[in-house]
Length: 329
Image 1 (cartoon, rainbow, N blue to C red):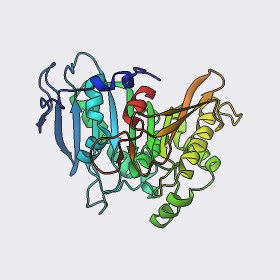
Image 2 (cartoon, rainbow, N blue to C red; image 1 turned 90 degrees about the vertical axis):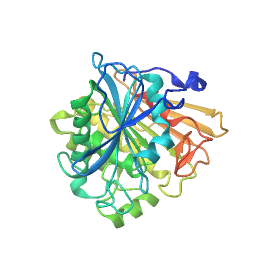
Image 3 (cartoon, rainbow, N blue to C red; image 1 turned 180 degrees about the vertical axis):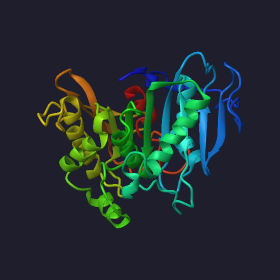
């Protein structure tokens, strides 16, 4: 894992050009090497997406990219406001891509993680999202080894699919209140999985490993979930960990030998500045002692992005999910 800066140590200093009113909205990409932060509004084959470019971006120095996928009923602007990822990107010097699901594809703007054609490589919505990444790569200088994806709810479930289908593109994934790989294969199944969980995490872990194909590798995963979530129940957080433990165990050496498992190697409880207690679980690759999975459970939090700003599905009392995910990435 790379980029292990510690932004939470300086939370009060995360005052970006955006916060100070210097953020410029434009329909065109940056044309100079060094400039004020910009938040572009773009379109690709009818799909709207937004890109945040921090102050000081230079084409001479490839920058990391974080892809952020919104939840149902949200759009690119709402997830940007809720996660406050632009402010963090300004502080830490990475770009952010916000794909936006169209109402033509989904009336509620859900990324359709339960549709079989959107659960595999080079098909459906995963293909579209990677094409948007390619659009950003064509316009900006991006470090190809530091492209990460995260999301909330339906966006989180899609980030799981992207991690399995495109391990060669995404260096690591973040899962905010999401579900395991192929947790459902229809909208009816999806409703059930959100409440009681999906199929066996072991079988889904093997399926995700199979989806990686010849591109298989150990993809680090961070899971965030609230213990009070009654939209996507907490059982799903445990299933995500178990599924990815099986996937990464296989990806690490091609064997189911327990080199990586779903029993936490470390556990730490703390209290966020906003008042919510949370427990951080770490899961290691036993051959290297590297942490490859982390799970953060936030006590009492409902279906929300923890520590977020204004907007839908945010909880300001929890730990800073964006900062902790960036630290993990």
